[in-house]
Image (cartoon, rainbow, N blue to C red):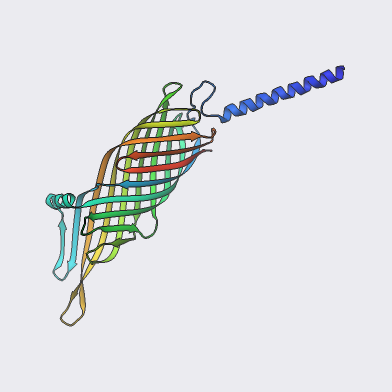
Length: 293
């Protein structure tokens, strides 16, 4: 009997230790909510990676500067667009920019709640300029454009239910080859497009279990710089053609106040999924997985 009683005590002790170990592991893995009912923020010193996808639709860009370089039968000359030229374009034509970006962020938690990351990705874009009933000029990537970016995100817990988050991001992309289509009949010999944008957002957030929805406002600017080389055939008296070469170098800019809304779902302390977006212009959607290392 004493032997049986001893065995029962040992089994109970092992079950108790195992239960404590499982409870400790569960507490370590859980990130929202924790034992105090508050959402745990990412801790200082952690590394993370984030594969993500982003789509942008930015309408109502404006022409802010432009240069036309001419090299042909009448010599070489350069013409800079003046304010009247740009006003005429902006009043009579539209400009739209679309892009589809796949990338990978690598980041580090500098402080509790403060993360800094850099990223690289492949960007497919489409720029539509001179948008009108008569003509639309379209620039499209021939090959995916290499894209670089930087982002900073900060989360500050106010109480057990409320938090404030801030996000800052910047992006630069350059494509040295592209496809240009227009209805003017000009022969396009080359095309390159550079783009850059930055965005700053602030939002209020709350957690419901593992969900972390947020709503706020932001400001963003988009810059697009297409450079297009065109040649026009000029017949000679001997029946051959000479060519006038023209380079168009334009700068478009768009800025906007936006509403940002999104949510994050945290599976455990190492893995979460997020989706967010901005409205009304640009319409931007960003989604990805955040993996703590």
